[in-house]
Amino acid sequence: MRVRGVLIAFAVVLVILGIGLFMVRVGAGNLVGSGQVQAEKAAVASLRALHWAQGIFRRNAYLDADGNGEGEFGTLRQLAAADPLPSGESIPAPLVATAGGRLEGDVLEKGGYCFRLDLPEGTHARERRFVAWAWPVMEGIGTRRYCIDQDEQIWEAPAEGHVGCEAGPPPSTCPPDEGFVRWRGKTNLRPVGAQG
Image (cartoon, rainbow, N blue to C red):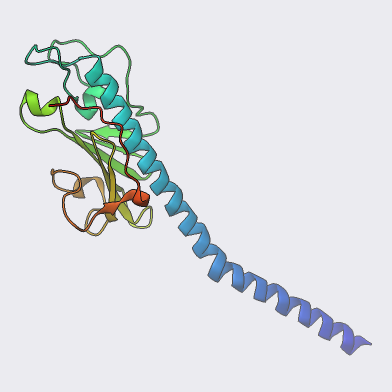
């Protein structure tokens, strides 16, 4: 009887160890992976929020340097009401939430990702185009970098050397090269830039 009880206890310990090993090998990987997926989804949602904010900023013509009645897109700091407009005034309310994040220079660090807005030179071009970028703050938080343009076209590519807020992609158009693919294969048609 006593040997049988010891064998049952031993079997129970082996089962518990087996379950523990399974959870460490499979569960931990899934836990890390699900965190990365969540950070990446939040990054895309933040890019869409920047697109929305740019649409409001331009539509309200908070910035109209050439005085033609067509508003221009603003910088990230102008959208966050962290910098004044050329008139010296700030927008009535921030269009970009920075709470829980850190806005340093032209880069917002929030939710494990770095965000930057790139604007072209010249008022005519700034009425029509912008590119917003998102890339991971550190290795392991996310594996992808993203960009969105004024037409809400979202593109993604592996983060590769773009990890850390100092290591963002160079200013360019979205998508900058053939290494990018459409995010989830989607084509969006919500342009916020001036036409023509």
